[in-house]
Length: 327
Ligand SMILES: NC(=O)c1ccc[n+]([C@@H]2O[C@H](COP(=O)([O-])OP(=O)(O)OC[C@H]3O[C@@H](n4cnc5c(N)ncnc54)[C@H](OP(=O)(O)O)[C@@H]3O)[C@@H](O)[C@H]2O)c1
Image (cartoon, rainbow, N blue to C red; front, side, top):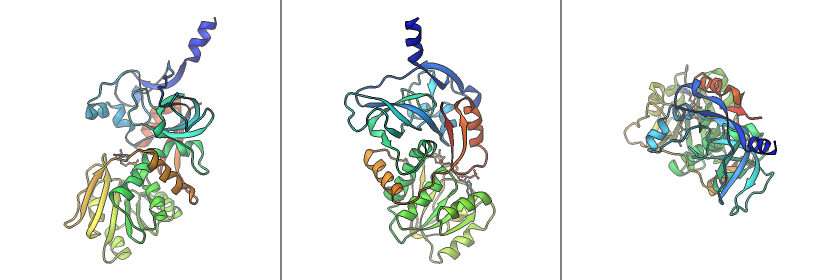
């Protein structure tokens, strides 16, 4: 009897794939709680972020690109938040009970669509500011990708003008707020009336609806000599039009994954990049978040059992991010 309850305690509920595939491949299963190594933290997950890239991983395309051999059951979820349940012997920055958020891409020990996740301590941080656990869960990858783009790739300086294309999306709505904190004048291209309202509320200096408005005209009115830099989170014909408002000598950055891939007008630099994860960058992000009111927009929260609905919702118009609540 005792053995049975111990065996039960060592398993957890997770949404795990037995094979890569469509949303229907996401199934609730009981699987072992991952074990931590010396440099890892075990997180009792309360919420997970649903990333725009999760369907890509679900279909097995990440492992294809990275050339890694997947092990099944395979648990998705790059981003999550909750409470520290245990720390490895080399971990001194965290203790049991700390409220944390973390990100780890294609974690071989399993992602955050589960009750527990074992994560490298370097990828873990205390939850900053007044963020709820859902807000913290959806934050890390998109915020670090926004910050890497703004500071490292674009080298954005105070007083410069910045276009954020996709300003009501996951990366965009965070990039907009971070860019304002870095002192930029932000021209936001959002999606739909609700997207425009969100970007305005988050402090954009000028906002247009990229699904309806004449973005090029508006951009030229905003900065008659051209806009200094652009962070692009969605591709297509409107993106190409908008980017012709970037001045000669200006810069464009977009994270790998944006399709179709944006191209630059003559005389403008363009760079595709990946978001970086490091304790120093996470600390920088937390400091920027804590320097004033910061809004992480969670459009919808689904239960773990509804993970396939959450994936379907990713393909529909939404603002900011989508979360899973894990009981
Ligand atoms: N390489 C990396 O390190 C990295 C990290 C994170 C993400 N990514 C990739 O970066 C991309 C963006 O990620 P994300 O999380 O920001 O995705 P997202 O939440 O889907 O954001 C993209 C936004 O662009 C909007 N949009 C599309 N066309 C538009 C238009 N014509 N005018 C205005 N807005 C428009 C979309 O709005 P609607 O769809 O509602 O219209 C959506 O809000 C994805 O491909 C993701 O996989 C890469």
